[in-house]
Image (cartoon, rainbow, N blue to C red; front, side, top):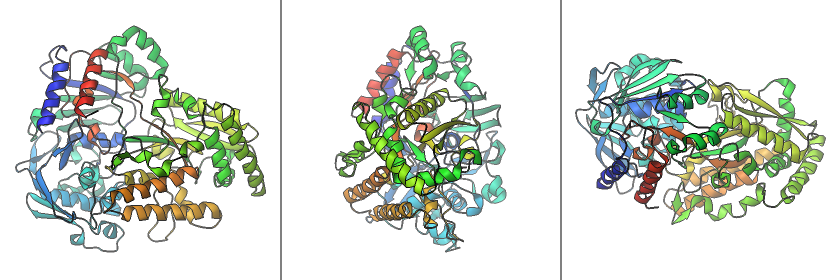
Amino acid sequence: MKKVLAMVLCLTMLLACVPAMADEAVYTTLYGSEVSTLNYLTSGTTWDQTVGANVIDTLVEYSSTAEVIPGLAERWDVTPDQKVWTFYLRQGQKWYDHNGKAVAEVTAQDFVDAMKYVLDPDMGSNVEYAVETARILNCEEYYNGEITDFEQVGVKALDTYTLQYTLSAPVPYFLSCLTYGCFMPAYGPQLAELGTDFATAADKMYYCGAFILSEFEPQVKHVYVKNTNNWDAANVHLDKIVRKYNPESSTIAPEMALRGEIDVASIDNSILSDWQQQHGDILSRDRAIPDYSYFYCFNFDPTYDAEFGPDNWLIAVNNANFRHSIMSAFDRVYAMYALEPDDPEALLQHSITPATFCTVNGVDFAALPAFDGIDEYFYNYTAEGTWEAKALKYKAAAMEELTAAGCTFPVTVVLTYKSGSTDWENESMLVKEQLEAVLGTDYINVELYAGPSESFLSATRRAGKYSIMRCNWGADYADPETWTDPFDMNKDKETGLYLGNSYNKMDKMLNDDTYPETKAFLTQYYADVAAAKAITDDMQARYDAFAAAEASLIKNAMVIPYNISAASYQVTKLNIFEGEFAPFGMSNLRYKYQTLHDSFITAEEYEAAYSAWLAAMGN
């Protein structure tokens, strides 16, 4: 804890030249896409989770230097076999309504009731998998209806302030799971009263975190006010957060920031050069965090219009040579210039699990032996002609095999991106240009499809409205298992059929023998992942097993690793390095600890704060 306080003091001193704050610290931002829900117990999307992260406290938190520190739990202990974890809650903490009126005390039972809600299929939670990942005893059996008595699930309120979790097996990353939404508390009587209506409006949920959502007008504004009665209110330095809706926010925010109307704006690459020349002194960057990985997915369940040949695509995508032809022809550095023109290579990844995310015995996960030689599967722009020739070999083999299978050419490739995202649109245009140039329009025809700016994921990726698409996944906890979750199986418990995960739908190929090679590979892949999950007493063996499974996914060209998030340019009045930090979970979404300054953080101040943070992190 002393290290955390010292870090905050250090960063405060570095920014001492910034003018004093106003009496009330009101942080004003724009947003261009509405949240799909306020329900932190059901949603796994980053934008939705931002609400819960700021209004609900968790048992443990992370400091600005990624150290686990007490949250709602003052302390905890664990049995020698690492299966029983007991948490002792702070007494006197309250639930408040959206007007700030105290409703009830926060108790251990609130954590139990919240988990029961998450594990009730009728509530429609999309994050119950994270409870299963934490190996809570009997959670999966309860969710699947194999047991009906929740008393058999490994979460208990021993008394008003003592909460206990029992695990089915040791989980070395258990504490890191607790910062995720499905482990947050909720007031039990309200959950019982509202059911699926819980958190459908600001007055249909209660708050126990750093802030209270006092106003929620969809597509108008969100207003958060400081919870002055919070146990750690002294470390909450913003009095109010006002988010104003504007569908053109990404375009108009920079000028509004210059006019003093808002306190932060992202500077996309289309205007970056002008800003560097005219306003370079106030340009800073976001914090590059390896908690998100970006990769291109091939869709195994296309549902777009018949004019684009979804049936023809399904034949093509189940051919390994076809997938490898795309993978070998895809110049990722070229496409990356749309996102990071200064140093695109620095963001490239050869694995889905980002480099630096986790290590075992001093070795980075992405450098484990399973990934040796993996770069041979990707386009290498430094070896001109070599990779194009490799891609054309795959093309020739694919055309012969696919013609025999009834596929017609050119195969239409629907490349989907989000409307209003200038950088993403530019990236997609580069991908289309480059793939067609290498492989030829006799082989593929890349069709750009701009998905809606609102509810984009549900309307595109989850709905299968793409052939290939840049997707991303954010880590939920500190273990490589988290990076297998987007590709997991989604099985109907009544019919036994695979419904398709919400990313590439590849598990649907297990339903029949139409594509035996794909089915054989997936059968082995899922067996390998299950075996890796079962290893809990030997971290080297566990990490090696996950690395082997992930490498097989890449070597079979089921997924193309791409990049980690760029440290995007911005103007901001917050020192981002004061905030909580962890390469997983919801900690990075919180505004706690951050201070609003009268002026935009200068480039010089940013670099000084960044250097101090790196030093505190031991880098």
